[in-house]
Image (cartoon, rainbow, N blue to C red; front, side, top):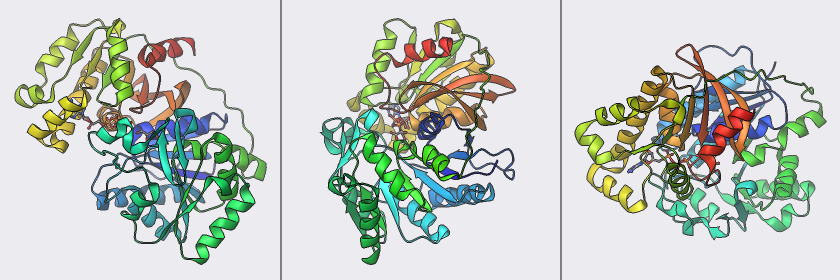
Length: 422
Ligand SMILES: Nc1ncnc2c1ncn2[C@@H]1O[C@H](COP(=O)(O)OP(=O)(O)OP(=O)(O)O)[C@@H](O)[C@H]1O
Ligand SMILES: O=C(O)[C@@H](O)C(=O)CO
């Protein structure tokens, strides 16, 4: 089937988030890990390529996204979506802006929009400022993110430092006037050579207006929620035929493991709640750097996997800062990611078939280690966090990749309940 929308996600949790929201339409969605080496075959109308380039050097991120674009074009896509975090995770250098500019150049388009709003998860944009719940981004727990601390809430300012062309805004008052008003405002910006347009959205209705106004732009950029209305619009436009997919849910044994490398406020709450009933082991990056992972492997091997033990590096901001001060930011992150990746392989080889992973970078490391190349989307555990099914070392496994801040306090327990019930 020809691909209608080709999506590129800058991390793996973001990719499953996007694929899950597109899959709510009931239409086929395919999620690939990394740019496939082979030419496109058996493609779906919605193709998502998961990359791990959120914190990569700018040139590397741009090159990977260009390769993903090329593959999606060969799959037949004529419209593209650049998915980044609903909290706009990036640095002064990128990678949101540089990748968007590179994709615009490749697509020969002079304008795109930026809308990371995800109202179901409390992310809204008003007058160009991003809010997490009722807090401005820069006052939210995102200010302490280990890799991309967000210290400004103004998306125009954040973007201006990342791009070469002018940045503008379409505010909520314009969005409230409907799709024609949004299109007129885009044209007005285009006349002033404004290439990068941040668009306000505080509720799903705003996203429907924006998607309707912008659905034929060659490139859209934003969070997963902006893409959610697109399948219904494409159906209405006759670009795609309604198709019922009958998903055969694979039987996945109840043995598994929870691996958490996210240090977000929500993950900290979830880990603490889970530890009240499940066995757990805390990883200390400094001890890992000094002594390796043998002790963690021994602990894992001593645990019954039907208890779904948790291994976590999740820690308070002060502990993260201390580890980073001693090891360096990148090295501290890598040590934890490598350890969790090796533990995932060890768990699989001992019979684990359910993997609950918390954190985008962590999910990238674990998924790569498990050698997964394509994921089918299953039941949604929380907004933006579906179960997925895939093959690792010839065996069917269930994998869920949880964005740091997503899900409620009981997420890890709930994930198991949802899988059993689906
Ligand atoms: N105790 C720790 N000290 C230092 N770094 C840590 C520690 N625990 C985890 N990390 C690193 O922090 C980073 C957390 O990023 P990750 O993307 O996995 O989580 P997140 O940002 O909460 O999730 P998301 O990107 O989905 O919002 C990883 O690189 C991880 O290895
Ligand atoms: O948009 C989000 O918040 C998530 O999909 C994500 O990208 C977290 O890494």
